[in-house]
Amino acid sequence: MREKTEDRSERPSDDEIAQIAYELWEQHGRIHGRDVEHWLEAEAILRTPGTFDVTLADPGDNEVQVIRTIRDVTGLDLNAAWTLLSAAPRTLGMALPRADAEALVAALRKAGANARLTRRI
Image (cartoon, rainbow, N blue to C red; front, side):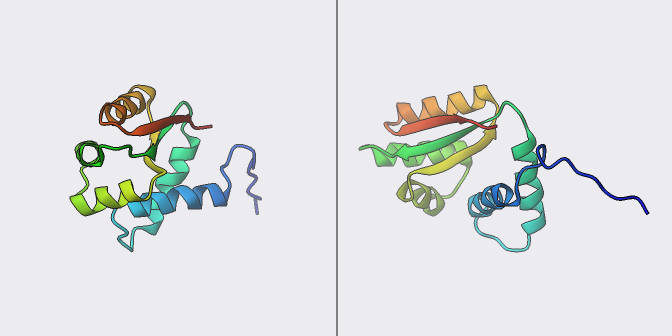
């Protein structure tokens, strides 16, 4: 019988994967039954080099315009967009390519929000 060897330094920790999987579950409307898909997607996100997260730090004074921007970018309905806005600081985009992440930050800032761009490891 062969033993399975695995380099733990290359594999993301289960806690990191669980955190991203939970955020994916929330972004997809908290629908149960897709746990495995969210886990695998989270693991892939963490293994992808050169990606960025976009965090909505503060919605600013023009919340209506920020909600419109969130809806345009994410495709969420009004309630989900409002929930994201109310829960700031909140990650809006995970593991995005640099150009997409910068475009999202620019759109949020144009709407009056304070958004952060963070490089993933």
